[in-house]
Image (cartoon, rainbow over all chains, first blue to last red; front, side, top):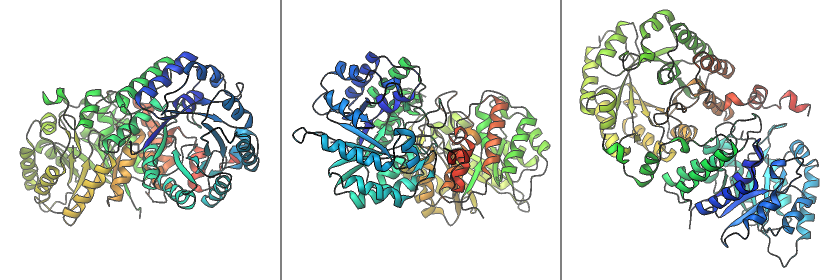
Length: 316
Length: 316
């Protein structure tokens, strides 16, 4: 049983933020490779408006081509509203992610409604759920630390909003999200500690970061120190930065798997297969590899994991 | 008085690891801008063999063109051996850095002698020093965590070697160096704690990291948690990676200054001037900007530092 869970978000938060439309069969191949690498929970894509996010316009085809996932793999899809949620459920998906922003202005910009309206949407969405059908709902809490319009967010405001959402239904998963990638490690540790202390009995919290300011790795370690054990990352660091088009955004899965394995914390992920999946998707999409680990010679990388010097070094 | 000291190493560890030879006047302009940005201690270059490192072949000219530095600025030069040390002292420099590796094979590869021979060299170097002339000697302890040939280093071996060096003379500065950039934050914290506990009365310890595995920021925070308050970084993340030619290597000064200032820890550095120095030297040298902070729009960056939303965001 792995000690931390690495949630792969490349097929969603990665591919929806790069310029190229990635063909359905490439998406499917990428997802299959990630499953083969050992990911047990991943974001497969978004049920969003194809005009808003054309990169995700083939979601139904991706899901159909994938077919049933292995029993122990939870494929999640992001649904920003009731309509997306219903599309996802109709496609047979049991793991919807409902996303809303903690910041009023970001929520308006992202889903064109107030935070209050989004919470009511979520309540209505939960009510439409067939009580006999087991659905694992994840709530993505965007802009928990920093908003592109409002700057640094107030913790007390965030905690009050989370309290309202948690009170809708117990047992849901949440991602405390640093949407802009501008949170500091101290801020991440502090909010994660408070969320777990206040709502930990009714809710479980993962951390979703970005690497905009270069604090991604440090933020994941800070979240872990606060008691978080589930982390969103993307193969090859796939995805865009919310400020700088073309810059890197998501925290690279390879770097986090490598970090935890070096620290002796098991992830359950096969790093070699993950590295290959990252190379495959960047080759196929033209996206840049943002992972540091990908640039390290494989012999060096695996020698350090195994505790022995690489063969070429021994010969030196 | 700043709470942490950021030691700029771009003119040395940055420029000596890029392919281009940077003209003397550009080096001087870069160093002047860094001083203007507020750095009080920096590596100006290396007194090394011009055939081994041609990028540093104009060290004497750089020092002469710079002229006397402001009284509160300590310009350091790296000297790998007695000959380099004597050249530096002859050039009027009072802040030599003597560098040796903790790993036998890296020391052989780097300075073609055993660790024992390097320690004897250092002892001889210290003996040549005119007791009436005040010299601030810094000792760069390379490969404290990880060696490109031997892999992960044993703490007990490192501590024994450091003990031998500290016993040569009290009051010297040291940099615990992650030369390959492959150290984990836990390893950095652990060794830094042990060094300070064992030798903190006779020696002061800074941390010199690299960002090869993407752990640079986390490693600096880990060193700080252990009690280290001095950190080596390079403007724009200038420099090469010891494994991947062309990849980034040094931890970007901008990202660390921005991190500490966001955390409310004063650095004494003017971030705007530092950003401009990073742009200037990468423009002039053709080197890639590896700093995350450089890619964030300035309005956003400074709004968050000042605690107010940026003007364009307020209008949204």
